[in-house]
Length: 205
Image (cartoon, rainbow, N blue to C red):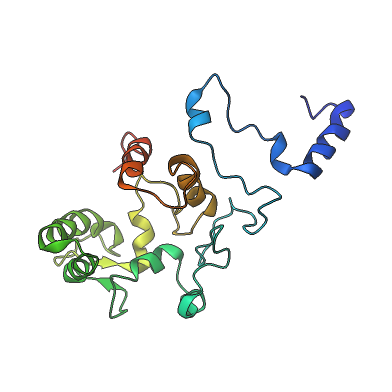
């Protein structure tokens, strides 16, 4: 239907009132992948997460938690950090804005990865992500990561949940579950394989 045609204006308005998403085509049968992996659509029956496509600077808003993380006043206490900086705050236990390799090792070890995987994580993360966060052309001899510049570490092969400035995009986050969780509100390791494969991009690190 051509909604630029004046004759169809009433139909367009009526459809919009009933369901704003009814006029948005998100899948077509001739391209099966668009049917298999449909994007998140709030709809009028799920009004909790408004403007899902707008990036939030300091709030990780989701459908389940539209106000972000409110436990222990997290959102208020970290309102001066981007969501990406908040994400990295777990590893910066002394909150000095610098993540040392030892900080990363301790963080992964606390998460239960064991000694070997924690060491590998340090080598991969600090070997690749330290330099972009430096404020000078010279690399850091200790391979430290500076949280102030953590947005420079965004790479091509990711979900797009964070934008290039470190903001959080709820739409992209919800898309992960709508496309790969098969109706569940959690992901299994088996869901992770197609997700990782599909978000891989040529020339993306």
